[in-house]
Length: 524
Image 1 (cartoon, rainbow, N blue to C red):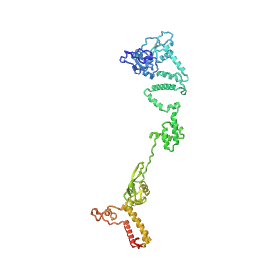
Image 2: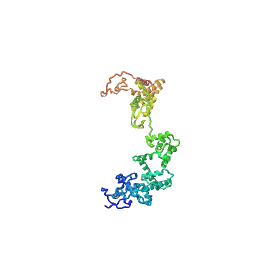
Image 3: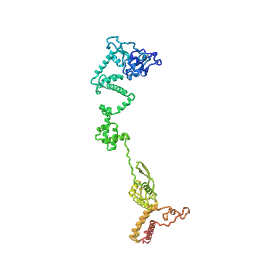
């Protein structure tokens, strides 16, 4: 079966094929799929102490001279033949030291080896000679000590002013990460490509440290560290970026131009999520810790910059029973009349607006208050104050009209009749029927009677009243038609003083009219 794997290009060996060690593998696979247990193999060759050989993939690459595994190796394929040769079928038949003569420290070429080459030693040999000495090959004690001294000298020559760099490189080599040969240059002086390389190397080192500390929680620890302000404080880095600084400058200007504390609190609630109190204080001098805390609480409760509608608290100081009694009185038919057109708007304390039909009150508010007070006295009901009544009437708005023409012709004609009588009284005095004292008294009685008919008389009407003029059944019954008659089950032996006074006043005016001497028939 002819096929070529990607691993053959790394080692320069194109003799790809199948292997009896992997009979089920008939095609190339990715290096990441090489997950066989190698612990027995490492133990046989005495290299189990090498922590760099943590997987079958790492062992195969190490024997090919690749000691640092990165993401680019994940997509390399390998055939069954190369997998077997560089892993299980790999053999080193020589028993003497495998270090090349150009680097060897032993004097005799036939010196016997008693150790095995590890990844660090194989990497150093490749670096010095350009030759690959596979991991697991034999090495003598002298060459092992010599290679260690070379590595220590290189570490000392890296940068003696950095005492922790040697230990760091030891850790990086154990973690399959290339060591740092010299200190990195200033960030402001390097190119964008170098910055990307520094960023990639720094990420690899940080990931290796966190995975060593806690392999299972490395990702969670990094998220917590990167989001915390502690790391910025340790490095002396500002907590806000340049973009956030420009954003905070704009918000600070808006905060200073705001006219009310509510608006400022909404703006400040946006800033509290971007920076701490100390940072915001540099943008808004004089801001107190209380205002910062209040704005932060606003952000947590309502959101960033969300306006909160003002809540008005209504204090009810009026007894609801008294209010209901008064509303029933002012909406009774003897005080209001409906209109066939028009409407008014009633605004509730919750802000809701109700549309109510337009009505007309037949009396002014002051007379309504007086009439209601007398009604409460007669029924022994305790009302609220007169000022509260006036406020309720102002809220329950209605039209007040003096002329009822077009709405109530009976009331309009009756009011006109009283006006004609009031105009007649001065003429009766002029023609000698009576004197000025009678004129004043009679005019006052007529005005009182008119007010009584417009107001209190409607209250006195009832279906079973003992006053004949107040009994609706008696007044509406037709004496000439039995179909429109109804008998009362009570007597009509009571007398209304106001109705009686009106009757006497009208009789008195009639008597004076008959006694007056008019100059002509037309005047009469």
